[in-house]
Length: 193
Image 1 (cartoon, rainbow, N blue to C red):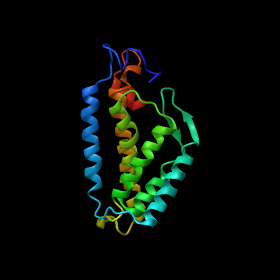
Image 2: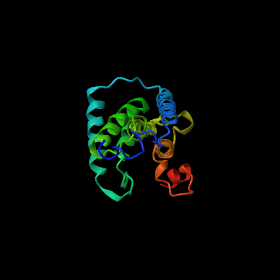
Image 3: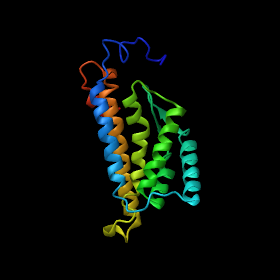
Image 4: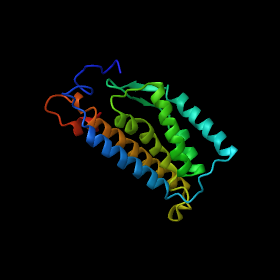
């Protein structure tokens, strides 16, 4: 809160955060994430084995997130394969469990190095964005790809990466658009960032 107090950005009469758009997009994105995870036919019940693997994968992803290739100027960073363990978990145990474990990891990321200016932006940038990583296992049992597990994992990884990118893009457009240079559309700035 101290980072944004009285900055004319969020908590004042001249705030430039598009709050209604953020709330609507957050709800739509949450519903899309849950809806896509329901395409997975596996049961959503954790065994002691899946909980142990989830804990190990979350811990590995969290540890790998400290290996940063570079930090971004307005928050965020580029890391080396930090989400790979979560994607593997989702591929092995299914998208439903993967989405839940991604949600947990997203909350942990918010604790690690938060950049929060709005409740809906928090949802999009942390729990919802990382929940999309859990969709990497969506194609694991695809009948059309059953003979090529590499393609199953690749297509799931592409879906997960694009979904996470979309969450950050929406958050950047509607919450962080104020950082765009003069004359640059917020959507373009968010896309490039």
